Image 1 (cartoon, rainbow, N blue to C red):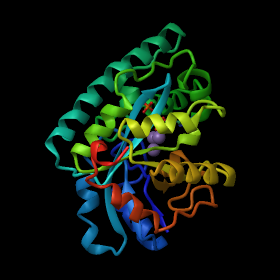
Image 2 (cartoon, rainbow, N blue to C red; image 1 turned 90 degrees about the horizontal axis):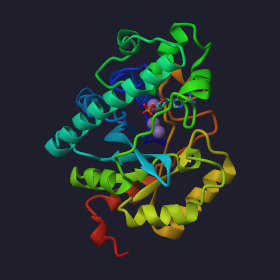
Image 3 (cartoon, rainbow, N blue to C red; image 1 turned 30 degrees about the vertical axis):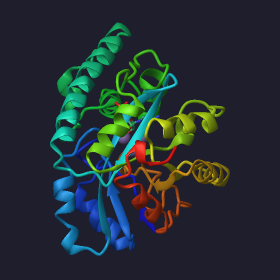
Length: 286
Ligand code: AMP
Ligand code: MN
Ligand code: MN
Ligand code: MN
C-alpha cells in the first residue's frame, strides 16, 4: 500500500515530515509522497530520512489552479526539490497568496469580522498561509464553531469572503512540474466543482495541457467514483495516482494510508507514474 498525497506543518498539516515518515514506516507503506501546498521547504527534512526507512520517500508538491471557472489542484510527484526555477516560482506563488489572504480578510472586515494578521499567521509554521489558517483563526476567535462552518459561511468557493486564485493555469503548473523533473497529476478530480462536472471532456483537455496522471484513489471517493476515475485514466492513457490527503488532526476523519478507512492505493500504480517521468507533452504521442 502507498500514499502519494500528504501534508505537513510546512503547509497546512499538523505533523512534521519526520512524524509522517515514522507513521508510514509503522504502517508498512511501501511509498509515501509529501505534497505540501506551494512549498518545497519540507522536502529536505523529509528526504533526509530515506536511509532510515524502507518506505520509499517521494518528493512532491500541490499547486492550486483555476480551470473552467473552478479551483483545480495539481500534484507534482517526483519533483527535484532543489530545482531553482521551481523554488523561485513557489516563492512568487506565496507572495500572490499573501495578497489573496489580505483580500479575503478585507472581505471579512466588511462582514463585520475583524481579524488581525497575527491571529491568522499564528497557526502557520512557515510563510505558507492559506484559507485553512484563516479558518483556524475564525474558530479560535469563536466566530464559528468548527473549520467546516468557516468554509461554509465565509471561505468556501462562492461564500462571501472567498477570493479565487486566478492566475495559475493547469498548463503552466504542468510545465513547471515537468521542468523540475516531476509528473503533473490532477488532484482529487471528484472533489472539484459540482457533481455533474463534465470530467470526460475536462480531463481530455487537461491531458492536452500536459497533465500526465490523475488521482483515481482518494479518501473521499466511494467505489463508483474510484471506478470511474480509474476507467477515465485508462481511456485517456493517463497514469493513476492515489493518496489520502492526510493533514493530521485538522482533518480528523482522514488517516495516513487508510483515508476514511476504506482507502487502499495499490503499489502497482507507481509503475505508470514512473513511465510518465521525463515525458514532456510533446513526446507523449497525443
Ligand atoms: P487555499 O489553498 O488557501 O485555497 O486553502 C485551501 C485549504 O483549506 C485546503 O488545502 C484545505 O486544507 C482547507 N480546506 C478547504 N476546504 C475546506 C473545508 N470545507 N473544511 C476544512 N478545510 C478546508
Ligand atoms: Mn490543505
Ligand atoms: Mn487539494
Ligand atoms: Mn492536498
